[in-house]
Image (cartoon, rainbow, N blue to C red):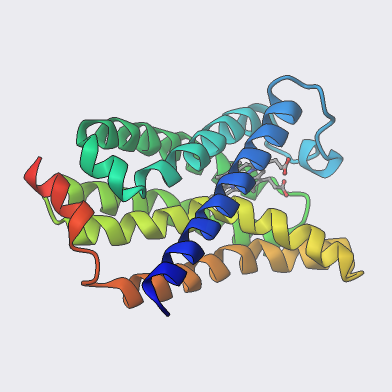
Length: 215
Ligand code: HEM
């Protein structure tokens, strides 16, 4: 792929992710913060919706909004202190969002298959984030980048799930079996795609991470 085509592809991809993040954040705020849109009844029926849904949504939306900023190389190089502050906020968002997500997984009305399908990423999410943070603290910046990409893969499951659910409805698939399958497929797909990206770009990204090393 030529350089300009690769750059166009990357810009289009980032714009699409930004659009989806803003859309999901807005719908979540309307449903769970302002209350101007009704939340889906099966979610409200979750055994642990009270008290875990609101902190999960607020922290999840914060993580979803913060994570993409961390991967903008130019911003990272120009304002490394900002990258650190946003990184800590992201860490805090995962620390709240993941345990709350785990409790919601245990209370899902979709049964044990979906419960385990949601519980695994709820455990991987803080684990990857913690490994990423530790790598940065120990100035292993290439590993930091890789673990944070894996953490973002799990955060972005919120996007993939919300693309897969309407797609399964469009295909005329029954809701409950699709929901159970998607509780696994959403994060497995993300992890596989991000792992491919990590391996393909390993040792090809010298610049931005080095800015932190020098800071
Ligand atoms: C590891 C990551 C995550 C896990 C394991 C997780 C888990 C869950 C679970 C189990 C539920 C309840 C589903 C049910 O009762 O069937 C839920 C609901 C929800 N989660 Fe997450 N979640 C994660 C990340 C996120 C993120 C990053 C966001 C950011 C937007 C988010 C936003 C929501 C929202 C808005 C709901 C309510 C359902 C809806 O209105 O679509 N979650 N989550």
